Length: 309
Length: 309
Image 1 (cartoon, rainbow over the protein chains, first blue to last red):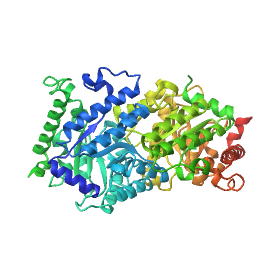
Image 2 (image 1 turned 120 degrees about the vertical axis):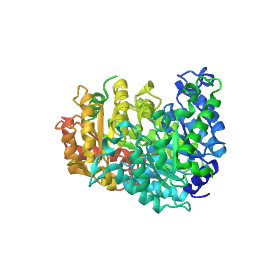
Image 3 (image 1 turned 90 degrees about the horizontal axis):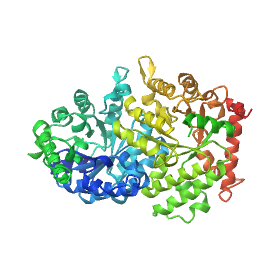
Image 4 (image 1 turned 45 degrees about the vertical axis):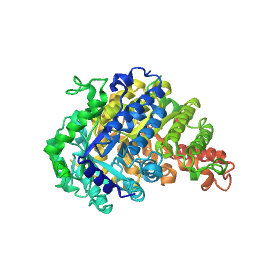
């Protein structure tokens, strides 16, 4: 198996776009044909509906985009049944040719961090959950990240460290200024070091960063500050950022960033402008239209347009 | 059901000690009678051994201590089977009369944080995992913590926010000084506000803090800074801190802190001074001896001695 960042580079180039589809299943938002018979008190039935729905999304997006991002919280919400569904969804995404970045925002100290890294990092049989990459939190410092870096090298997996998150209140601690630099900039400096230490032949490392699309100026700064790190950019679509907001996330070839949209794609059947044309019955057509529109916006407004050349 | 902090106060008073036993099952450390027949390639068999082991620990410690702290990572390490075992262990701990603080260090933004809070907060049937409390990470800011606070109020559960962690490298970002105060102190100020907002009749709030025993001076400072917050204090025993290091974590009555030991108790069968006397065969007796010794040390060296009056 190739280095994670080389696999990501290849997948983005082959698809000609950097779209990362977020798999955030919420019972109340599922299209009516899948939701209708599900009893909320039966977590097994909910988990089964999540499997059906996520497989349906994957069937549509697998020929179009390089990767999906299951959000662990929405599966954990339903207990052990939900977690079993998450494992199935990851496996199905791989069978469909997609890379899987699991959004778990895990971390802990020492051997506990190692347990998380063993749990999640490594596709196929390499780990029990089988993700290609995992999001992690930096609050516990460098020694908490090291086990993830080591496992990423060993299993050719990737790690995305939270740097500047997309939420309105993310700045409360991240924007504090210490020694003339923000906390997120201190984190970015560490990520860049780790990215350089884990560089693949693409020039990007196995260690990347999460940087929200909702702060375009900081995104541009952080692209420069972490020249060797893939950026995972959430906040597009439902959270309010558009294609122009993410244009500085890329290098000149259109590489170096994947842009996530979750609700804007997977629940397009209930959102303008797709709702009226497709609705619940044709929800997969709505997913396809929303995905194609996002691809087109990124090609028109960002260096991702250069990927297709 | 009572407010979380009142239930914790009651349990600590009734047991006469503040010991929090960490349930960190690691296959290679299990006592030989449980480990011997387990095939590492069979995650179901490992999960079954974890159930047996954790139930055996709970049987011993339930009459002695107020609470246990399962570490999610060690269960997640074995995939969906491991997670099913974690749910069982939480349920068994409750049946045995223990409070359960799940160590998951979760967090995310907005509705995703809500999904984590729904997943874990609330004993019995209130949530699918049924924990009394959950550890969470503060990096994403106040709006990421709010859904946990709201769910804690609604379900009479608790939340412990990482403030100053016990690992050697925890200071890299936590100790940065911004506006004349460390990052962890900024976090502590927020935790104290949330603790006051969620105060129970004990005077402590539903929102507490994780503060490592390995930094005794900061522990003393943080006790003062977060007067209404229960402190969850890791680092005792295997991580090097002793009873004297945690003496400033308590109020004068011996309340306000629970002190965690994981490996030092659950794997006492393979550690000095218990190994020679008990060994693998009498591992439960080793667990009991280590628990009683820790209780005695805390009673002698800290205000927890006042609990028994």
